[in-house]
Image 1 (tube, rainbow, N blue to C red):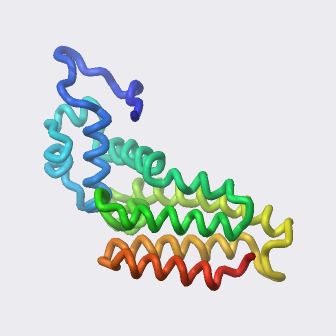
Image 2 (cartoon, rainbow, N blue to C red):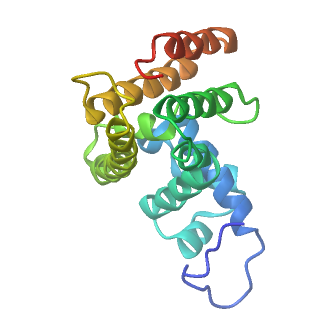
Amino acid sequence: MYNLCSSPATKGRPREFDLDVALAAALQVFWRHGYEAASMAELTAAMGITKPSLYAAFGNKEALFHKALDLYEREKLAYMSTALEAPTARGVAERLLTGALKMQMSTCDPKGCLGVISSVACGVEAEPIKTEVVKRRASSEAALVARFEQAKAAGELPEGMEAAALVKFLFALLQGLALQGGSGATCEELQQLVATTMTIWPTK
């Protein structure tokens, strides 16, 4: 369960809603619409709370999004940290693509990637959000580059191939899979994309 002990305590009557349930509902709204398009009315309706209650429990909309993004990474992207533990670079790629595929095939979550959806926001209000999403993605890329550098040292990468370039290639595939999932691609089509990728993957 998500711990929100650091959230400011409200005075007077105790809260009559579950913070974890409300945050999970907010995540669904952000995931479905992106940061900019998610209105406070939609958020409060989905969370089953009033706007004053939202501010008291989570802070403003931006603070709520940060908490939702934390939840998203912890619950929906857990496969990414597991993938780094694969014994080969090919295994890392296969685990990442398979994890992303399973998320897109889920029947209970919105399709697409919350990070991708929110990183393309263009309004002034969304600039801090876009910056945060890009920073988190850069952190994930750095961890993957370090893992592929190990694979390169072990002789897994073809001659002349750089770990950073291979990571960019893999992230482009992951983002493409999410975008296609969000735009209506079928599960079979996404499975074919993953299978084709592993057929042409450049490491053993």
